[in-house]
Image (cartoon, rainbow, N blue to C red; front, side):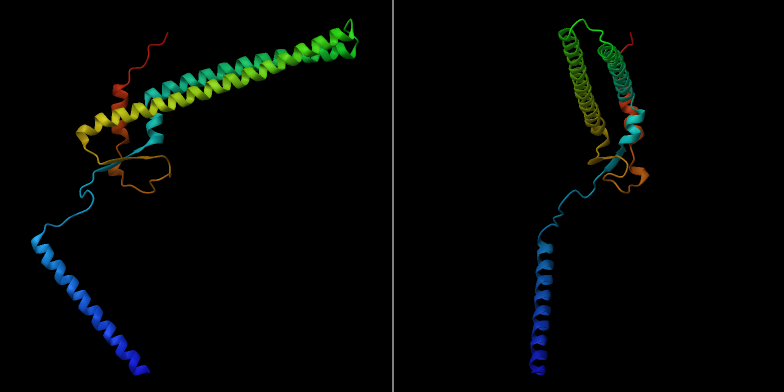
Length: 200
């Protein structure tokens, strides 16, 4: 039984050796007649851009951020002023109610309805202003992306990179040689192209 197993193993080994030599002979015959085919680009030119650094140095994005911060502060101020006004009216209503300051029950109910409506209006205003701010932030993000992409198309005509990767912290690019970092070059080009609006 054991000898039969050894014979079978021997045949299998011999068959493998024969198949291997035939494959290598075929390959050497084919390579002599046909050129080698290499799949994929051989000399890829790759670079990366640190997005965090780009955003802190790109004047267009800084100007947009400044505008958005100002708008956010204006919204907060408007909402706070209206909330204080409403709070004062609610306290005054409560004081009058406790001291029988209303001429009739109907008058107290009318004042309560007016204050409730003012409260709903304030909530709606807050939602509306917040949505407008979010929409503008999304529009700004698209503008930023379009600005960078259109610049990279022009920039890459001369540079000829096969691939330019973005790197934000440790998102996708875990390690890269600093020699492939073109962030400063991109920022310099973007800022040279940017014409800030004249301030009124």
